Image (cartoon, rainbow, N blue to C red; front, side, top):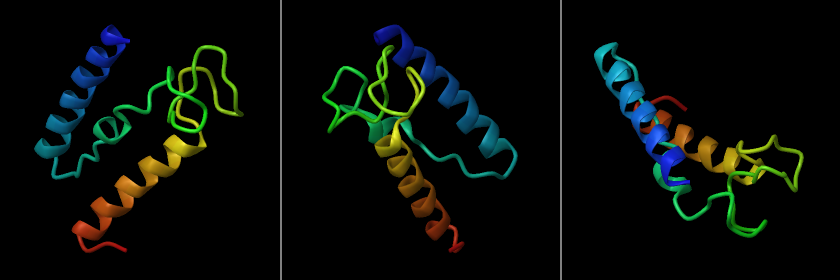
Length: 83
């Protein structure tokens, strides 16, 4: 997990940098997902483990994770005056 978290943080830093350089808004989905990883219980995790227990793909966001991401995007839109 530590390796994958590091890779995700590197990719997010690049995306954030590119968004800023091109007048776009970067929405951080990583920070809100901390403590909601695939090792947590079904009722807590935002990402499914290698053997998923929901309709989500392995090591991808589940319904709870997608809802959390949508909330972050909506907040970013509101901050920009887009609703």
